Length: 308
Image (cartoon, rainbow, N blue to C red; front, side, top):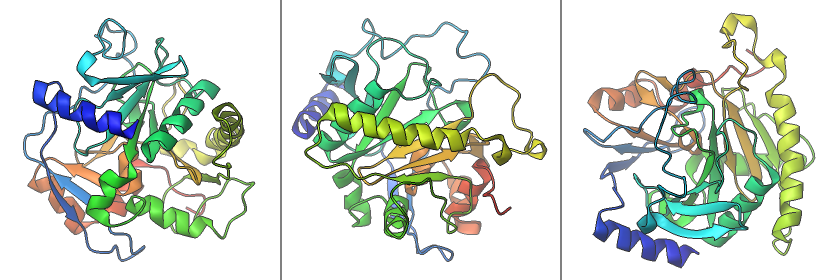
């Protein structure tokens, strides 16, 4: 599948269907608190993504880019298991960035299903990639049609020299000292999060892998939705919608972060912020990272850890 993605990217670039955002990239100095070297992409006047709103987006008419009648042929790669399409991300900063929408419409704020996890796992293995899911307005989700996304490890290794993105690499190293069977919070991360290790044999069929992933995901969701994590003083939004969160999935662990705000100081953060990579649009946003550092941004858009 990776070859198909590369070939489709070339064709879509030539036809103009793929709108690559040109950005300078910088590997920041090691953070004082963690030693992580975060990635910073910078562009001036980049076209903003269409942002949903928590109250209006589900009600307002919209042109669903993932619906059968609107899916761009030049961006289409393949179908998986009869449940999901694999398409190129139309506005990409990094190469080998694909979207995994459900074929039939589902709400983005619905929990991941067994079929979602099966498709994610299959695509991850085929693309040498990690997967992520932005659930809820505060998470940075920009389309109401349910979709997951994937980025290949090689596409980011070119910038970092690491086999995994910076913050995921940091987490993987520290999770080795934790048990396989429980939900974990790392004291080194200054925001509320939930981690669970994964150990699935590479020869496992995708259906069986999905069953194991669903069991882990359900355990994490139970922790995510525990009310003691969201005291009233944080003004948790009164809404029937679930807690907004970002989810990152690798073959070694799942990483879930409840979200309090979509952005801080104008800097938008979705799941990609929690791999250790950020996109800034101007010098003022760039200055934030120089003055306060990436972890400060992640802390501002998330909830405090249990010790706070």
